[in-house]
Amino acid sequence: MRIVVLTGAGISAESGLATFRGPDGLWEGHRVEDVATPEAFERDPELVHEFYNQRRAKATQAQPNAAHFALAQLAQNHELTLVTQNVDDLHERAGNRHVIHMHGALDRATCTVCRWDWQAPAVMHTSDHCPHCGSQTTRPDIVWFGEIPKHMREIWDALDEADLFAAIGTSGQVYPAAGFAQHAARAGVRCVELNLADSANGRDFAQRIIGPASQTVPEWVASLG
Ligand code: APR
Ligand code: ZN
Image (cartoon, helix red, strand yellow):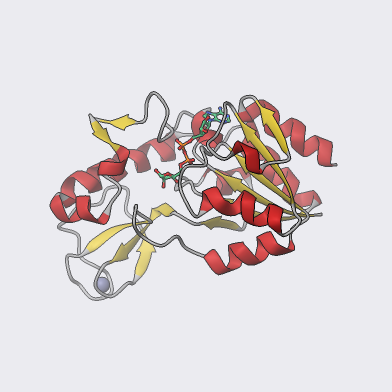
């Protein structure tokens, strides 16, 4: 079967990484939306670096959970396109080789002047120099609010050709990812949602499985054979 899976912050919640819109969705009193924007980075780049430095450290310490491992198993048995909005690397560390990071990745850095990208150091600062052009214009290679997500052509194509689309642990509030189910359903693709609670776009899915990802995802993967 050709399966497209979209994951969100909920799949990493049980690995100890905070979601964006949950009760712990604040960072030192800032709404995440107020740190994860190009405007915030222009206003206070050191604060934005600090936010991502902390998240990078947290992600490094975290371990993949049963849901991440189950998706690695899914890739063994099916033609899986794994798309994540997450910037952690828990899918890779669970064994998924090809992961489409549509919102970028904590372990990558980029230069706002020459667009070079490279492996991010554990701690980034405004005083860092771009390894390519030398200017002090480095930033995390993360897609911020108002910026265009990565790899969209590849994702829409995979959705058009899929037999099954599953959204796991995402609140369905951030586009374009929140529109994948509607797009897929129109193309005749069966859509299933796995979430701990109701999401904003639940009615776009033919099937909904409610519960913690570490339990629901392994069961769902097993049910697909
Ligand atoms: N198992 C399954 N789902 C869970 C769990 C869990 N253990 N814990 C939380 N969830 C669900 C919540 O019910 C919620 O629907 O995960 C979802 C998390 O939602 P958000 O915090 O909004 O995360 P996400 O949908 O990934 O956010 C999308 O917004 O801030 C931007 O770029 C950022 O990629 C992010 C995007
Ligand atoms: Zn540069």
